[in-house]
Length: 402
Image (cartoon, rainbow, N blue to C red; front, side, top):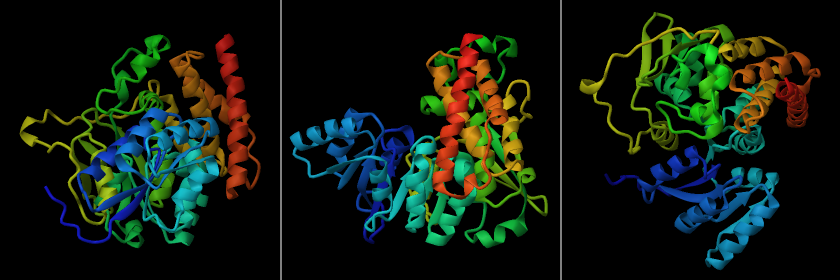
């Protein structure tokens, strides 16, 4: 299918181009020659992958936060005869995301590191495709203020939030009058039916083997603990202007219904599709239009039964932390995110057990002091993030020695 778009190509900056979201974004862009121009690519550590992308797409800029890795990439780009300019450092991420020549920013950097460049894009009034849920989890009020003041267009890319977004009118001012509550669906991850008494023996390899989605290691572990859903609850609160009690979660193992809006008249609107991240990515790139994504067509004649169940609190104890932190003083969601990043990394390094991830998160929330006003500035949030990580590392050390 040839894209009929005839306007100026949209210049796209992909923050986190070597991750799964970044790779899928490039796949969608490749299906629409002439409609998009890859203007900047950024990667955290994968020099060969980023070099390969530069060779294919020839962006104006490539960015790596680490100076040593950026130097390696710069040398290889020069040897390949490319005109791509290689930049380094956290400020360079913000600079390309907010550059005057950029139209669209895909925010796909994993973790709190994505907050600053996504904020820069929002303040610069870009169309921001937000796949970095941590930007809203860490600094929700601050982030949404930047979106409003900068005149940015914010389009969610998480499959669940994209589903909600697709079920709502284009005008956000009408949402509050329509929504009774929303329902975020969750697959339940790879351990939905595993005996909870065996969770201590779960390996990183098992936790990263998601039954429905192909994702990075960190988000795969989050899916196994359902901390990803806890973070999505927090994200939804800010994206759609909802009270915490207006957000529900239900297990839906088939991952066909991606989320639902329950309207005030009790009508239920749902977005369905095959579990393929290229669908929300394509929608974000073209909104309010729709373009070819490359995903398989949903064949209703081949579907098995669609089932739903309530999350088991003993199996997914971290899920409830979403509502607890939303109802606590501002800044507690930042602590939860930081602690979880530390806990997941420790688990992947085999320093703690799978069943200790929740202990790290809950204990860090209890132990970390949140100063008044910490959530009102980027510097305050980054200081709180650093303190939460220090506290969480101490909890991890205690788990490792027990």
